[in-house]
Length: 149
Image (cartoon, rainbow, N blue to C red; front, side, top):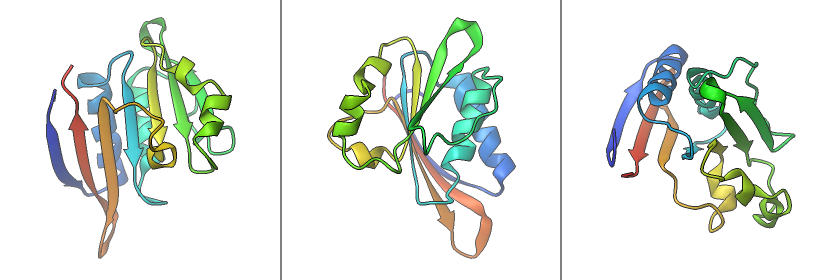
């Protein structure tokens, strides 16, 4: 999936986890920015956890909502940085924590709520949007775009 866009529905949390594992295995590489959009409860953290575990993160993966960022060692000696921008008050806060330094070209950077930093983030290499499906509490509509590399 390179330079592609896809839209589909998953029918369970496990299917979201499976999708994240496939992204980690087949698409996500060091130096990529991965953005995850969706309303509260759409499954962004579930997907982030699956991607991080698929990259080899052995630590327990939780949402970094109160920390803003959590860093995980991943397979091959690399790292992945997981940002949750839900509580971000302004993009200037990202400048204050040195966000651009995290985009060093070697780490995978996952960002939940990227719209909170509109105009600050570079274009995503992988952009996923999750949405709940009316009348099915377990299902999620996913759209995924992968920029050409």
